[in-house]
View 1 (tube, rainbow, N blue to C red):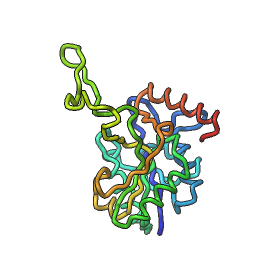
View 2: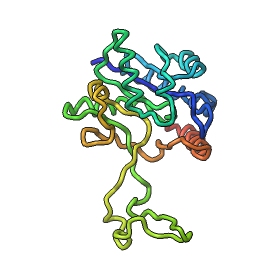
View 3: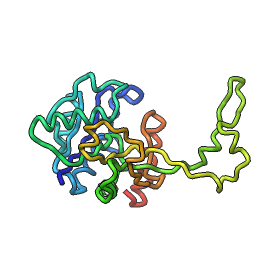
Length: 234
């Protein structure tokens, strides 16, 4: 079974400029994903999909491949993950490479661990009835107790029907951890949605999960990473 890692890394990040190659704890952000993919021992190829020449140079120096450049039409704020992976698989197929599995590994995932990539693949491979496996984590507080700020500046319950329900009686909720998606190549090609009954969850502890979409997120991630390094957990 052939397996490829595809790391999407466009150049036009707006909230955190040059996010994918900005220094994070002394290395370009993308280095952590490339390193995890190279060291986990699963992939025949580790491919970076980018529209940006500088990102391509950094990726090549870190040991990844950049066999094509992504067109600008697939590198804007509205392009979805599935479209990017479909394009990469088409480019690879045109060059004669047809993997059985493709893992979309985000470039901004400094907490990704090689062993979790292996667990994700084993989870999907053990379930031939499923198409994807991806990382999730549970919410720290019950989502049913969420609040909103109304037009008057006051607070009200987002789900008033659960206001009096004990927290231990509420269903646990999960969110996408934003690290990676394992998928069968055929499922990617078909354009199946990632979040569905045909997908399996790999649950991560909260201390390994942090979205990095704003400067505040970046600062929090650096603090988390430094703490994990100190404890020897990463």
